[in-house]
Length: 274
Image (cartoon, rainbow, N blue to C red; front, side):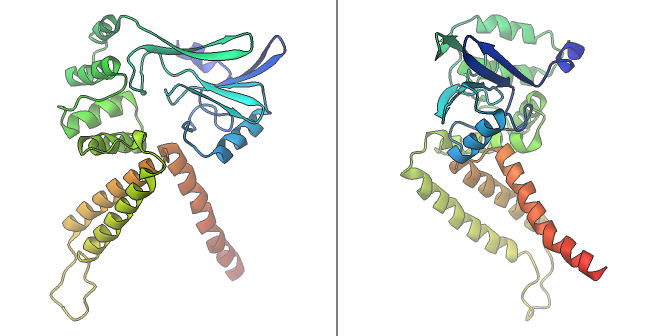
């Protein structure tokens, strides 16, 4: 099966009648791993459609979130997921293309039979419990799991540390009453401001762990508390990203682009010294 999958082309272009299609798992710019949600800025989608060559239909997956949206002349379609939903509906999601039109559909299937098959995978029982809850609820993790169990189960299913951090933070925010997927244009800026203010306060508390008071020679570097504040800052930064609709992959791309900008003057200075 691995050999078969490895032999597949990451991008498929084909034609049905007069309609031109392009299909890939993630996005045309990065067919396997790049991530854009339906709420991503239209400029990013326009860039992807341009990379695809403006087909009539651009078919995507990866996010497990069903949606369709028109970007210039191209209809972008994500049918969702059959077995690992992330959109709050336990039914299998798919899309039907017929006579030039696309319809997003869902169909019920035997979820418990699928869950029963997990018992033969040889994974930890609590991991099976988490995966079963995802199937039964359409993507929600069980609330009675400990943080360690959540980490282990989600990371085993999706071995990406940044994505796991985003998922656990979303779960934590839901526990305290904030569902970032349900924010409106009116509430989104207010929540972003709330987290920005909290970020400023947490930075001030981190500062107090450092010996910045030159008039108090007894003050020492408190690494333990500094690390705790750094972790809390990450919680807040991830929450801001989720409030503003920034995905883990988008954040990684933004980080690497900013990294290149930071490197440019450094490399220029080094070349000048040479």
